[in-house]
Image (cartoon, rainbow, N blue to C red; front, side):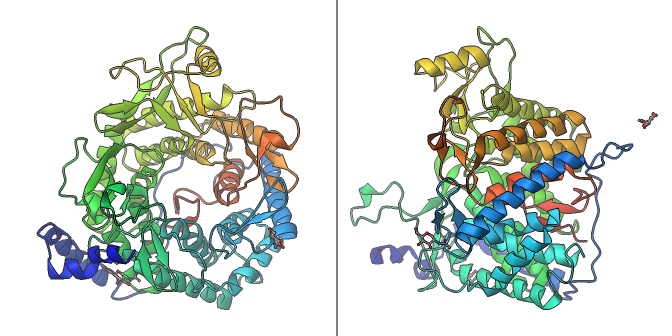
Length: 567
Ligand SMILES: *[C@@H]1O[C@H](CO)[C@@H](O)[C@H](O)[C@H]1NC(C)=O
Ligand SMILES: *[C@@H]1O[C@H](CO)[C@@H](O)[C@H](O)[C@H]1NC(C)=O
Ligand SMILES: *[C@@H]1O[C@H](CO)[C@@H](O)[C@H](O)[C@H]1NC(C)=O
């Protein structure tokens, strides 16, 4: 590891390369703009901005579906109390055995990540317990390396969202009083300051890990540090766009709440190499990855909206909803997003060829690796329909609406094609309009049978409690007002209730095609905190009144935490 340090900041300072001149200019401009914007920090007196995102003519149909909303809220209470009774303070409960995991630095990831769901649902007794724990967390200590991406979206976002919901008057004073609100904000600052070494690279892109003891950035533990450089895949740590482009929303909110420009500034610099890259990429708006964190140069040729890239595109759009419209970067964000959305449609979307027993065709999104099209999508990419729909409304792009709703139908097809009514983790299809020879073909008897009956086959058959499909249904319901999206969400929830509910929470499924296995072996003993932070939240928001957390005044982070749109 010591040998690695020679690529650190000091070398950069001695030998500034011309490639950093552009970044230097961005630093100056960003600093100027942020200082200008925050020189009179008035935090509480700014009114909430409102844009017309949601469907406008509900005519009574946007009221809560009380029994369905209650069922989801009951699922949240079950999730909370099983954790409370069996794993309180641990990061996550193991829902089958009742054991626990501490893989997220042991600060109680479930508690922080689920708090905004409890607040929206009005589960006040539960939230009071969570706030008591949150106030006592010491974010300065961690025995493990800290992952700035996961920590920002789950912990920092979770803390800030509670402050936002309190400031909007949505949490009663006896659950969170003003002193508690201030302590939670101080915790957010403490955590952001401890994460600060992540941003200490020549490019501004974050290190994959931070060591809280030495206060230095570190590579991913899987990065090979052999003295022998050929054993390493890349010379320096290289990361995907999601890692470098998914801290800007949270840090922008932290800057607004504290009046300190540094958080938004560092997070803006972190994604600047993607936005103002001097390395041309073949498709408008889309970035090639992975990207070297020392130089900002793409060192791989992977291009897609799936896991690892997803939330960079999501945050381009969401920044233009969250931040003041007068910020001059907004036009760049908007253009990058729109270009990337049309590139996605043009280059990566693919209709499945009809299959012997299934004449319908479905729209999916694949991936590109250099010149090779990969006919494979994962559940994670089912966030795209919701995000594209949000963009179609905000940017008045009717083509994106049509595209988004077709992709959403494709995601739904993966759910309705399995006996559990839950879609797999990833799948492939034969493209109707061929991109040369398909990279993936069904290999096993089982895959061939799936392909024949449904036009796609699973490549990973698990369900990991993921939210993306129901998240997109939430956007579809709130934006189009069409009842069927609410019904689809109910079908998905009913399936999760039937197949995932375990003795100590909601387990992941080993195989969404398997309804034969009885007993515990049908489950994987894991319940990620996003189950409570996102999956249950988006389901509940779909069944409650459409005025709750309206998309006209709230922006949801990539982890489902609501932040206010502020003028
Ligand atoms: C609103 O609903 C009422 C009663 O269901 C119906 O009579 C009316 O035509 C609806 N209006 C619109 C604009 O859809
Ligand atoms: C977490 O699990 C360990 C055993 O793996 C156990 O000793 C500990 O008591 C558990 N923690 C809680 C809060 O239940
Ligand atoms: C901001 O980034 C600089 C490196 O450019 C780093 O030294 C500093 O600690 C960071 N501060 C915060 C609060 O992130």
